[in-house]
Length: 64
Image (cartoon, rainbow, N blue to C red):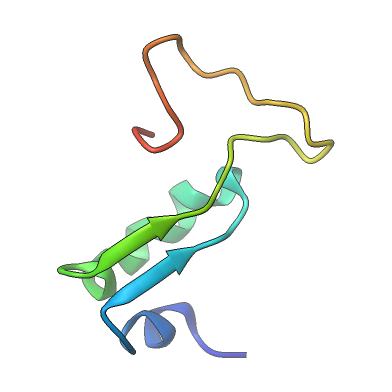
């Protein structure tokens, strides 16, 4: 298994495919490695049982 920061260092495009609830804790430490990169976000705001997480009407998962 590769360290996430080391994986982000390879290439110009990073695909984010982690649980939505993990994004807050994962992206902060990866910010330096993601700077200047294209980030494709494949996450969806879902609970563990696949039901939707309630977000404010004007918010989206990407905005969070």
